Image (tube, rainbow, N blue to C red):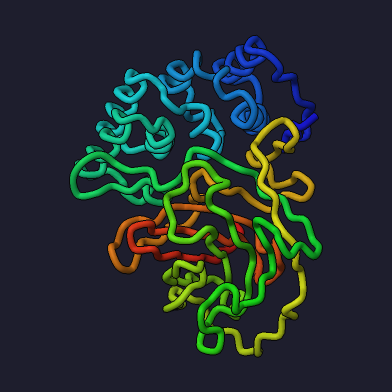
Length: 340
């Protein structure tokens, strides 16, 4: 079964709306481990999130503290929840700040919810919770999600694919305009943006996720040309530079990634799908939310999350690797963080 609860207890079916009612009853009674329930709700988010709609108000009203569901799955289950949910969450946030309420409000994503988020922050609410989840709060007007609600599972296929739509391991001269002066030395993958619904318009067909020599944490900003190659690359927020000379083999780990919709063929365990064989990350959806997300160095706008993959997509360093876009300035941010 695609649900493998982290608790080790066997799963129950989630094959009908009646099965979802059983899950919510367990949540309300508090008689099952929240993590066990969370893996079932994650499966529901990846397969039939519409079955959760009848329970949105019930969960928001009094069950959020036991609702152990990752933010990206909440964005599927709570999307479009009624304004009554927004009013409940906004009222509670005015009384006492709670990250469960802030994340649920962000996940709803309606105009009313985005207006309530902006009001919460301007009245002293925690901006960081929202921005780490990919929600921008401008100085005026409603908040703005800086991610697509649509997710695609990213699968790695090693091999030689010269015409790959999403290549892994390109030569650096196909990634940056001037390899001789660029700090970028390693290519993870290139993403054809049109294959992920909801990503912003971009001057080139693809955007690249690449790395400097460092195997620690770093952020690289670059501008994209019309041919897709980067220029003006700048490394910031880098860990102490590695003493060793960069020695990774340029031909190592080449292949392609394939994008597939979330569905029943993924493995849902420990609140995510990362144990699915061959899966290396997710394109679209919100950022992982564990670290601050980059803002564009030119316009200062929170950047749009495009994809996050494990460094194992093409091994260099260890941890999540993410790509962000500023569609206005045609600037990318590539980030390396550690496992939480």
